[in-house]
Length: 361
Image (cartoon, rainbow, N blue to C red):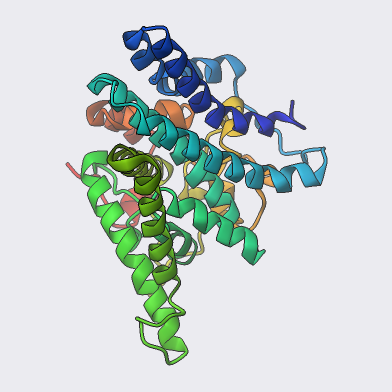
């Protein structure tokens, strides 16, 4: 299972394919209520069954190299990207003729697709944009355009990884900050930072910000083209569905950002700079099953210490701050701030207060 467990990542889009097929089949049989319920299937599996399965499968702290064919690990994110584009086509095709769905069915469909896109589009893109190969990095950018968040390609690599766990990083939540206060600030400032970083890069070459070499301009054009394609293929319902799943994917990503760095602060040195990012600046989670589904995203501590290391080679860091559960559980817990604070503040390291960022009362 250690050799081929990452293939489970393809089960995530598979859940949405299954939900769409079940909904269409039940509708054809006149079972509209069952069809609407079927569209909630991915959410039920990911946020009810997965946390239970995580506990049953337990943790994997093994740091031996994963034995297996290198080509499989290298090609898996590309395969997941191709599956995502096929899923988006199936999703829009379904939405185009889903005027029979009631409010509950539409809500389930958009939330489910958004969560799946947050994993199979944004998380897979996260792996690709860290690759040195320009084609793979750009494939990650195209995936991000499918959820209208292409600025993540620039801001995550050139912003977040530089300023993680400092006040300058909008993706690093302060101790005592609720996820609902964190989300609007994070989404707005991450998008703004992507434009700023590109403008600064062009300035180094003596070029204006509104230059054709501005990467954000091209990604914005591609995002608008995808929105137009959704409208031309599936009409107004398709455009609504595409925008809804994009919004949900973005929110899902930023909630996970909230979980990954909550309350952690890098030490500021006497010269005003911050210490080098390390495993202590991200929360680690070693639950085996969710790590396979998320391509080792939960070994986030090692990822920030060694951002160029491919997902299959990320290690468990015992000295890093440890989450009590996998991301699916922590995602739900973050939506309940009083309970979240009670669980997480007992685990915060002393460096939070030492860094001059006391817990917000």
